[in-house]
Amino acid sequence: MESAPSGNGTTLPEKRKFRQPRAEQQPSKKGRFDNKKQQKQAKKAKAKAKEGGTEEVLGIDIKNFLASHNDAEAVVENAELPEEFSEIELEVEELSSTGDGLALHGGRAYVVPFSIPGDRVKVKVIRHQETHSVVDFLSVVRPSPDRDDSLIGCKYFGSCSGCQLQMLSYDKQLAHKKRVVEKAYEHFADLPEGILPPIGDTIGSPLQYNYRTKLTPHFDGPRKGGFQGDQKPEIGFNLKGQRRVLDIEDCPIGVDSVREGFTTSRADVLNNLGKYKRGATLLLRESTKRIPDSEDLSTFTEKKLCITDPKATTTEYVDNFKFDSPAGAFFQNNNSILPTFTAYIRDNLSLPVSSQAESNTEPPKYLVDAYCGSGLFTVTCGSAVQKAIGVDISPDSIAYATRNAKENGITNATFIAGTAEKIFGDIDFPGSKASCIIDPPRKGCDELFLEQLMVFKPKRIVYVSCNVHTQARDLEYILKHETGQKYKVDSIRGFDFFPQTHHVESVAVLTLAD
Image (cartoon, rainbow, N blue to C red; front, side, top):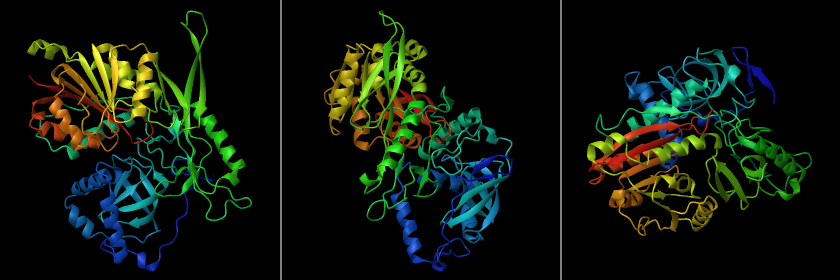
């Protein structure tokens, strides 16, 4: 791929080309759409936006950004718009929770990828939407004092949609992610002032590159009749802001075994194009085998493999805990942070010493691991309680969790395949003596689950989330519930499972008052 110099002397990948718009696609000078089809498309996109998803989060950031410039509605209505596909310069003022820069030009908000506050950048205007304009990053005209392009570790940064923050020092990435958590609770949890504790500092990852144990590059299929002649598909990840695939030969945030597997899988696809009548997603998942170096098993050598069959079993170690799971199933993708992360969860299952002294209450002695999957928390935290029960609606997950507990000698844990309507139905101990770990998917907990949680009333709740925005929404539900009003939020903080990206995991800890 050709490279072009950025404004501060570094090189960024050459930007992709866009089609020129038809005349009827041009927006009006006031930032609205003249074309009824575009109006319908905008409404449809808004309706499809997932609650707590990227579109909603970015939209709220844009609204608040405009509000900081006084009159948000007037700003949008009176904006003078540059022609689409023209090139302009912008001063970036804020960094959104989605990792995009926000700039104001002619009274209108512009979303600027691969930029940070203080950057002056050259961009190409791609399209004008109802509330903001989307641009393509071209180059840095004048870098922000916080920008350090020598930190960029991937030649595809600036085109690939995977990473957003490689130009920022790691300390500044962590500070930004703390602010992401703070904003999530400001905007998605409508709670009285003072009910939440200050957000804690984000816990960093020991590895900032070479950390991902799973990658899923993909490619599009041929239009008709298979790949012809020298025709080859682009294999990689989506271009930023497009549905097109960027051809990528290597991804430096992946662990070595996965990167080597990527090279092998790419070659296999390109050498066997006749097999593919449509596109495909490639699975690249690390599996670890420990080979003892001595008879007493005190030392060992680790052999890393890349698994590509979704149905194959992979093995991962967290400290000395061993976990088997299907290669295609969910498991945390950054092993380097898992020992710190699971220790934090385990330490927060018990009441703080001060709380025990004040209330003369014994700490919870039981654990419920809802959404237990293959048993990560049940196995790593089981030693902190007398009895642990893992619950999941997937029988396959329960089978692997049971297997992992046995493999690790966890004798006080059992696993139950529950139903969505009766997730706590077979728990044989009272919630008042239990801690509960919940780790839902990105959409968060549904109301059916939260109602059952409030009936169970665990003494301690440790809410692990891969989407802090839906976590904030769910905490509002809990704290406004008739039962949940008795809960106190002890702590909230982020964990950085995905350095170089805008993603942040969040852990909230709650205690039920006596």
